[in-house]
Length: 207
Image (cartoon, rainbow, N blue to C red; front, top):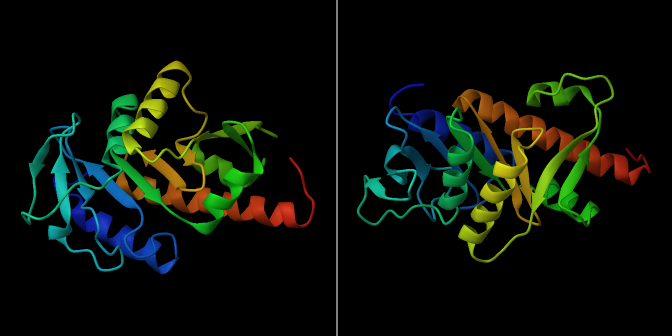
């Protein structure tokens, strides 16, 4: 990965904005650099118009290390990115988007995991089995984001997820990967799966 990944984050953000997954200022993207810190979209930035100075660089402990603009503040969900990077040291990028489908599917289950359909797209998330039984973790949407981050960290240290993605109820999906390009693919695959789940439910297909 390049020392400064911001251009990749800007391109992905524009694409997700155009797809309706990062409307307005919603969502946040981050990528790590060589010293283990990460660049993340600053709070309150319109995701279809990001520039290199619309980010901040943060340590794994949450310390603000670099900001191109003095008024920039880390995203409110920075603690979730910290939790992911701490749980998965090999992760180099973490993307969080707010699509309609990602919110809808969390209402299809009452528990803390969403069953995923055994479709081809799971291979892109690392599942290479015939007729797999795979679940995506679902977390409560607490007003205080650090509480969500702690629950993610506690759960994943006890039970690693089957896929590199999680859902926050009525909020959105978060994915992670060992490169920014792979994280972008993971978002697209997860969103395809969510659209499939919504469509399947409409025609009465269960899995």
